[in-house]
Length: 147
Image (cartoon, rainbow, N blue to C red):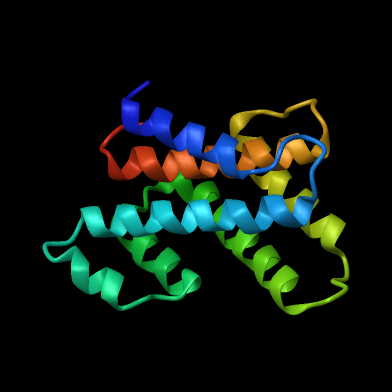
């Protein structure tokens, strides 16, 4: 495993709470990790990355720029998963008592697991793993590796 990818995995394990933690915290911190990876990905493809970072793109905008730069037909699940996670994060950030949160989380995890395999661990661990796999996929795309 390349050292930058290993560093990402350590970062995820450090910042995403362990198995029995609050799902909200896993989503919020996982969203931040993905945002960092998307920023790095986009910055890696432009001649003057400072201007992209200075733009302070909202997550949804950043996602579409990254998708425009890195999209491949076989990766549509990656972009769909990231979009679903962003939607969940927005609900959590702007709604005190979100409705259908469990269903939205389940749909997100299932979107990712359809492509990486089903995990039999707790739901919190499955959520964590799904976020980690999306972050790794974005990382590998912008570092020129097949995921």
